[in-house]
Length: 184
Image (cartoon, rainbow, N blue to C red):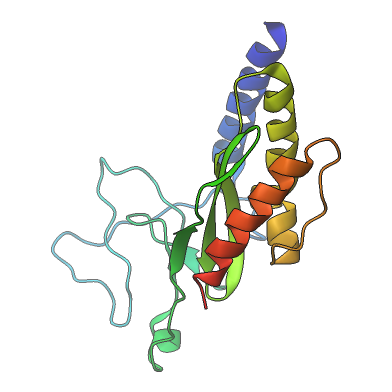
């Protein structure tokens, strides 16, 4: 009980310290936004808006590079770099493989693809019901799934079989391969 309390307290204290002590690069002074005169328009070429008195403070622009827009949380870039042709942003696609049954239960895999790269994999269904099937399913899921799992690492269904969970591993690979085939 004491560890979670200490972790939460430490996180809150470190967050408060970062907010209080964050300074502009090289000045040692806190960054302060200067509001524009009331009714004045933003400077030409500026994509920033006048901060409201009751608005939460957001990240500020630096000369070093793009910043994050306080309203949307998305990166904003200077107007000069946006003047060129619009770059196509790859969209994320979610593909679901079929349910593959084995003697222990059903397995189904979902992948997220951006461009031609698998960025995430997750088991939608895994055999459950007994302690042994739960343990084997957890082993398969932890090794294969996630943004840092073997599926993302290898970018294919060519995965190592999990010892003791051969049937579940095979079913996972078959459902995964069918999901990958949908991208072609």
